[in-house]
Length: 230
Image (cartoon, rainbow, N blue to C red; front, side, top):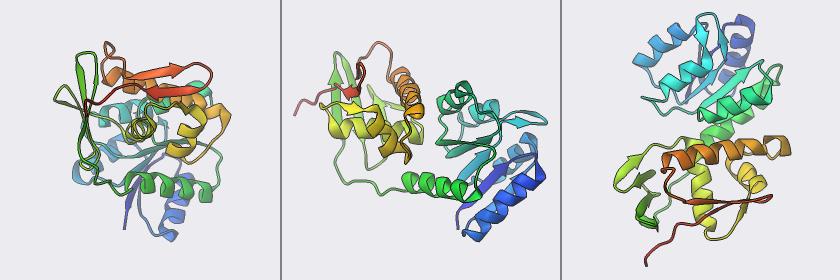
């Protein structure tokens, strides 16, 4: 049974979500404050966190930003902040999804299932592959779910991993933003395509700004341009 933490100060919403998740076969725990959630995370690592943004004792974005430094836990932001800038901020933190209030409990459960399905997708037995660009070497270990730049491991969120994996699978072909959105996030709305750009920006930063691994195809999408020496 998968364990889900719900960090939400509105009791009715938190308990309603928890009840629906329990009916769907999950173990759900609710926390009305960031401090309560933080204490629980010291003892238990859940399979997923459903995180509100505006809490009595702080900002949910900042809470997840700090959590990402030590734990790689899938996160769905659940908030009343509907502005596009807030959505982008959430995905910049590596969120796996973002749902705004009010929402259908069934929709939330479907999104939880989708995120966990993506995280748990079976790893391929393909061997480790080295890609190069200039003097840089990117080591892609799909079986171990690891990426290294010049021998040093690079931390990618689950969403970033899926996007980079998709670009590598199609390389050197171009991949549209719409395809990346549909393949990596299980939904495909044009208004969300900026989310892909945000994740690409984060991936590029982690792979080194001096290294040109991902090419932007204006008005279309992206292409991975690293090459192998096989």
